[in-house]
Length: 120
Image 1: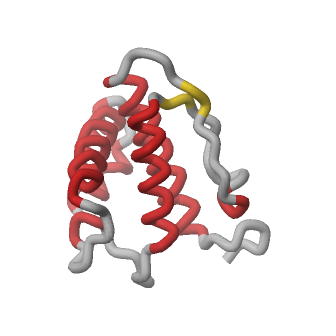
Image 2: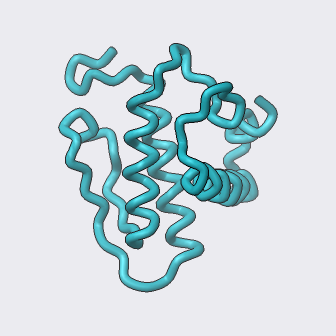
Image 3: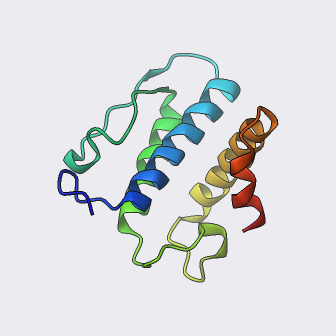
């Protein structure tokens, strides 16, 4: 665990991926006014990259981050295979859309390492 933030390397990686995927989805799918994403949690300072998001994606990302930090499983399974999903139904469908779109978007642009998550 990192002394600075209290997060494991896996948690940091999951959080960075979530932020990247939501930011990519928002950039490609949503037009209109976007604002910088501000995180209030001190333990996420320095982990979450600066991104600009629309209000809907900001709400989804905040929810996703809170659910990731609250995950009771150790080791954390992929959410799609979890026997006790913590996401509420409306957020679960939104995050599936984000993951599906962003994952395939990055794979098509050369991020073949992300294929691992599709076959896992």
